[in-house]
Length: 422
Ligand code: AMP
Ligand code: GLY
Image (cartoon, rainbow, N blue to C red; front, side, top):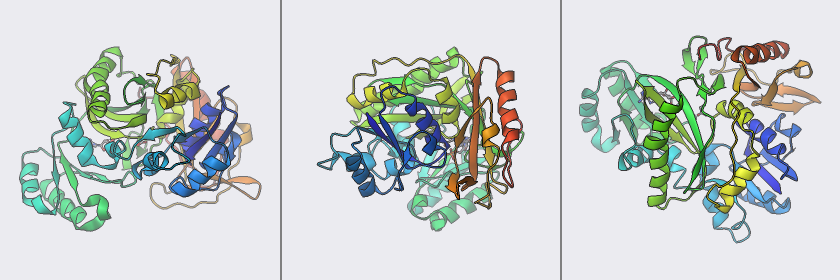
């Protein structure tokens, strides 16, 4: 079959790599892709958010299945766009309906969904300009630090953790006054939970599901988890504290009620769900949903999936109750992200990348790269994801960090502590 994958980051490079290994795939297209996805398929110069252009490419290239990587087209309703188009209606698209994508697109929607289905999560209240005073009273019932979440999509910048009450009140006003535009017309105020986080992913047809390998993401820019939040500086899989006892609780208290909740509420969902979890004294609580896979978790997760991913995706598309097999390797995988100097603040792009030919023992997934003048140059903050799989953590980290040292570009920065804490 011919597949079109939407997106252009490290997650999509990893998915393109995995999809291209499938014996089922004839041609793989990626829109818009990057220099790395071009190694596994054909990049199309189309934005994933331009639904008309995506639809046109599907018809022109005889696409049999569309796989959506990022959240934006999903929250924007690409699933519904396909279902409502006479020519595209029967083409399977892996991703939730617009309503299902609200699990990520609206924090208020997600929290009330969790509440309706008894899913453990932080105590919260949603605030708009109309009930700010009640919001202040609610904040008074919490202990610092205070968590404020912009309701809508905010490119990963919509969660504020504030140390004292007066700052929380000030930040709340600033968001309601438009700092995040429409996304911040509603703000979720939330109790702060402390614990270690992990990312759990499922693939679901809205009825049954398969649990993919669990991963941990390193969010802060600095070693030892200090400094500003980033899109993710690295990942590992599996995560030692997410053992079978913990995962049994995750499945029973969080995953199963979520899928059952979607089914009960007639929300069409054929795609991935990302559960951002926190371990509070052995009990999982749900911090957030995303309607897509994580990045850079996917880079570590795909290495551990032994089964043919396309076969599983087809199972979702045709709704055969996910009877197909998901085999997961017991090995350890790790990903170290190489980022542009200055990220997550401002940084240069267009820097020549050298050393990719010298990589020996890792798989290098491209995130922010493009081909220019016959060479590969940087085009984003997160540039390359260097990933490896192996039976011992030590040997995997040795291999990854050796190859991290071989690749170079001006301003290259990475964390040297990925994986050493688990
Ligand atoms: P997001 O940007 O939505 O991926 O979430 C940002 C991060 O904020 C999460 O991964 C957590 O580290 C943190 N966070 C969100 N909600 C809470 C909470 N209720 N308690 C503690 N940390 C939180
Ligand atoms: N790594 C976190 C995310 O993809 O949102």
